[in-house]
Amino acid sequence: MLVIFIMVGVLFYSAVSKTFFHPSLWTYEFAQFLMVGYFLVGGAYTLQIDSHVRMDLLYSRWKPRTRNGWDAVTTLVMISYLVMLLYGSLSSTYYAIEYGERSYSIWRPYMWPIKVIMVIGILLMLLQAIAQFFKDLAAARGKPLS
Image (cartoon, rainbow, N blue to C red; front, side):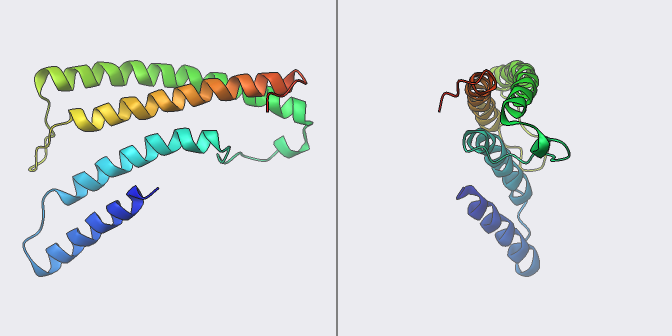
């Protein structure tokens, strides 16, 4: 959660350097890299503490077992999406490492560090989604795990 403060610091430095000094070329792209890590690693944590936002048109009116059953179904959809995302990110990371892929910006950083962070974040989110699926499935059957 402290990454957000680093990102704000980088963007603040960018604004100050652009106004008073020579503009920095690396700040926006570096802030984007930080945001990717923050978003993907934070996604698994948000799943773990059950803080995702739900659209509550019908959900609050359902019985707890119905809610858990629906959560299990939607978690399966999320797991299938994360598996495809993991497959693509592993392929992209392998390519970035093998060929020394660089960004097309003026700064030209290597892309493999952020792609490795993406793979780790997606993998953590996938593992947490699988655990959540089994919790929801057990609760839908009337035998909650926790």
